[in-house]
Length: 331
Image (cartoon, rainbow, N blue to C red; front, side):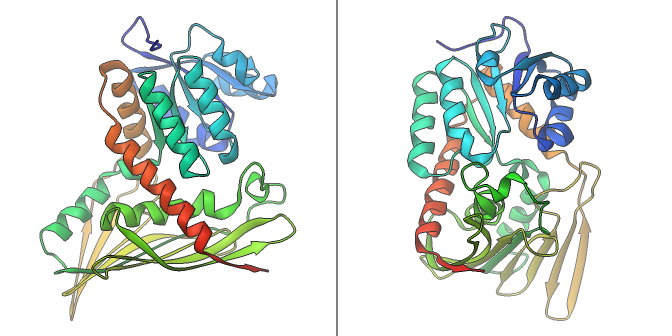
């Protein structure tokens, strides 16, 4: 049976005290009138208390204890990537709606099983690929559709960061799963959004750290059935890059800060043609506020999220195929 608030607000429980929750998602939830944070859980009660002091709600020790609460309609799940599948399933089994940080799981079969479970139980399950909810990408799509760069010929994107501190969960194979799961999904999802789901794998190369058995970085080449290429890079051993570009028959569109723009940031969209260059300053937008609002609407008003779930499934499938095809080089 669907878990539903008796008020016009979603009573949200938070499973895990992650940095992304502290910096971005919980402040957005606190500002959203349709969401009330009622409980925050951690394996360490002291850590849960620190979060609860700032964001309200009860501090809860243990994730299952969160699911046992009657004042929780939905769960926000920012746990490490390879813990997602288990706790999404437990949350759905407990009758809770779920907003989960990307990736939903580490494979297509696991993702499909959970989507089917959520649909069968009439519960909302949404993957928080937050960049999709920023209006800058709609502006790019409109320019492409209006022929601003002619016929689309190629897409490229990169999301790379400097090395993380020793002990970071991304260096833990059984928990974080490495750079491909964490960062590789961004340029892959962007390619899907602009080129569609019919993407073939031309080649892929991963750099693996054998000490930790995790992928540190990589490059992927995809193409559509009519020969539009996508060149993608990801990693956590580089200088910071966070961008994409679309090349057409008459010009090129470039955009920076595409995946993690601050809510006060005004994106600058650049168009280059032969001997001409234009820049457009786009409006600020708050992608975290947008995604939590969409999740709340889906829970309270029954908004249909099947289209978003289908994209999540296509992403999981493509990432599985890239992983299987990749040449792995130990470093």
